[in-house]
Image (cartoon, rainbow, N blue to C red; front, top):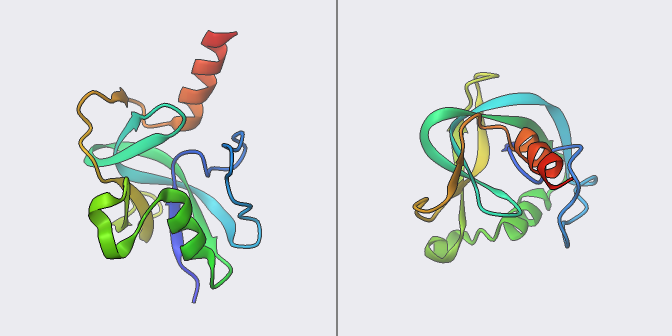
Length: 134
C-alpha cells in the first residue's frame, strides 16, 4: 500500500542533493505541491519543521516501493523504537492543501537558537542564500 509524504526541504525536487542522499527515484513519485501547517527553521544544510502556527511550502510524494518508508526513515535519522534519539519524528499531519493526511518529518528537538524562515519556503530560502553568497 502506498503512503503519502510531505517534503519541505532537501528532498524536494529541483534542489541540489545533499551528500549521501539516497536515490529516491525507485521509491517515491511526485504528486504535486502542498501546504503544510507549521513553522520552518534553518538548521544549516537542511530545514526543521516545528508544529507551530504558520504555513510551509512543500511537495506531496507517494511511495512506490515497499522499502520507501525505511529508506526515508534512515535518511531522516528516525528510529521509531527510540524516538528520543531521533532528530526528526515521523508524524501524520493534516495538510492545509490539498486537505488530506500525509507523513512528514517534524523536528524533534527544541527550536531555541534556530533561525526562523518566516515565509516557510525552503527553496526560496536556499536560492536567496545562494544569491547572497554570489
